[in-house]
Image 1 (cartoon, rainbow, N blue to C red):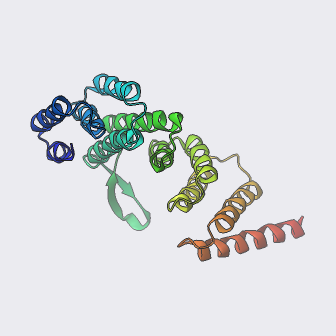
Image 2: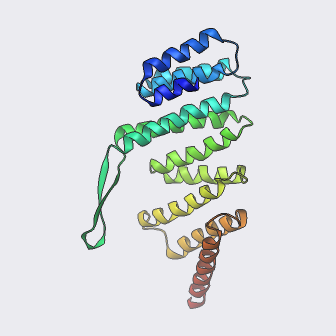
Amino acid sequence: CFIGDTYLRAGDANTANTLYTDVLKKWPDDPQTIFAKAGQAKIYAHLALYEDSNEVIDEIFTDYTDNPSIAEAIFGIGDDYLTLGNTERRKTYIEQKLGDGFIYNMPGLSKEARNLYSKAKDVFEKLVDKQYDSVYTGQAEFWVGEAYNTLGLYQEAIQTYTTFVDKWPNFEISWIAQDRIIKIYYRMLLIDKNMTESESDEMLLNAYKKLVDRFPDCPIAEEAKRSVESYTKEIQQKGELK
């Protein structure tokens, strides 16, 4: 199965398909064949045959219900869509202008890249909805948030990250989800001109507090503590001026 994945990543879908099919025929009852079936869904994704890919995913949910590796197999399909989206994204660069006339290029988000990220999100959401008792379920929820964030759907991203942090607080990447929320808040402040300064200060203070309280040993905890102190002081000073 995993040799087939190697060929697929190298762009040889035909050889990959031959290997996956061979595994399914020779060892139909082996639990590991679920990865060959998942490989077929990946092939369809690489060929942009998305409906066919979805059909295989549905077959996996139906035919491998009790397979202990089902969450891992489905996660792998979503991860493949993400990889395809990242590859597509790097093909398009957007010129960004900064102060002093400085110009740099950054990856853009073409229509096809958006489509692939959306497909990845859909696969991960299907996995999350099943609520398998697996670390891959938690990882999938995080990547749903990442997909929303990449697509610019910030409210949905915040909601997903928040659910992930509350549901999976002991994951190594949980603090990253909370940090993502903070970064989105800063981004939204540039967009939402109706939000008052006091509202934004309160929102950011609470987000930083949650990061410090939940993840006191994370790499950015000290920086977050300073932000809590700064926003607390700023809010208090503004309150005194009223």
